[in-house]
Amino acid sequence: MDGVGVGELPDAADYGDEGANTVAHIAASQSLSIPFLASLGMSELVPEVTSGGNLRGAYGKMSERSPGKDSTTGHWEMAGIVLEKAFRTYPQGFPAEVIAEFEKRIGREVLGNRAASGTVIIQELGEEHRRTGKPIVYTSADSVFQIAAHEEVVPLDELYRMCQAAFDLVVKEHGIARIIARPFVGDRPGSFVRTSRRRDFVPKPPRPTLLDRMAERGLGVFGVGKIEDLFAGSGVSEAVHTESNAHGLAETLKAMQTSRADLIFTNLVDFDQQFGHRNDPAGFARALEELDRALPALVQEGQEGDLFLLTGDHGCDPTTPSTDHSREYVPLLAAGRRVRAGANLGVRESFADLGQTLAENYGLGPLEAGESFLSQLV
Image (cartoon, rainbow, N blue to C red; front, side, top):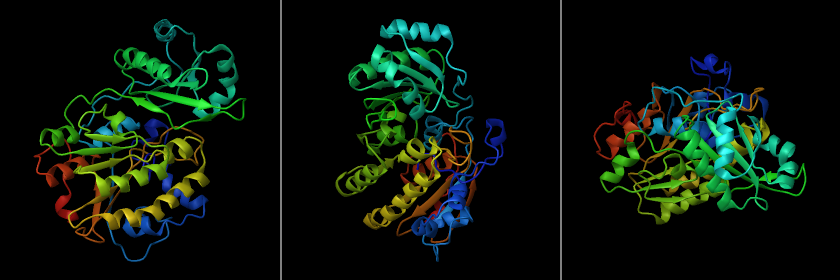
């Protein structure tokens, strides 16, 4: 659940996120009904969430040990990699010499080069972009270099080539975590909307992850959503990109029914992309309710030995003035026929505990970080 956090981490103030609590603030400000999530233990983690009655799942929450609060860091830590150094950020925009070199490599000047909301900046600069063909470059408080371009002005293949040029420059040479292609459509300011053909360009993890260890043993990993991008394809045997949470949930169910993969790893990005960054708590609440309605069918589809785990990669509190990610605990909810209903998994010291648990489950031997909670769970 991309961007779904359950309360500020002890060091949240260092990131400007003191007081953040994504799910609690949504529940307090909206009429939120998520009975299935509550029954898995969300109501135990967030008192503002109405209880779902008897608990049918196991629950806890996880701390992030790595510095930062971006998707790459969060997903890598889930898979066993704890970073010692945060990816670099450029909240004031990228240095002039970096932009000049990027323009040289793509053969075009750019617009923007500042921290901005992606949906806002395309309204502000979209018309000039259409007129001049100059792509819109922007960033945020997170470690991202984003390139927005109208699909009728810059064809997708060319936009992706621009992103690769940016990757070679600012990821490899300047320590940025991600390049994101942000295609959009529309014919005038106010009508510009981003499309689902986003792509993320991310370096390979610095050391083997859970996914790599699985691949070494011939175990398949099916990535749904931006998982393949976040791991640069490393350890992912099958993948499908998605257009929305609903699409991601449908593809997850389909993979459960048809794929022979041993692990299905799904990222549901709408919480973050559509509602968290846009400070839209009502939309965020609707997305949580949509997930809640879909979960019973997914859990029911599981076989005797299957384990269903729900978590987040960071927070993205839509009720705060910031439109950026928030440094929060993430939920850890588990379901399955062998799960100990009502088991309290506690406050885990690292997202890597999740990867370590899966490594033990698959008999892979210990990963470099994390403590397994498998014995508490089943």
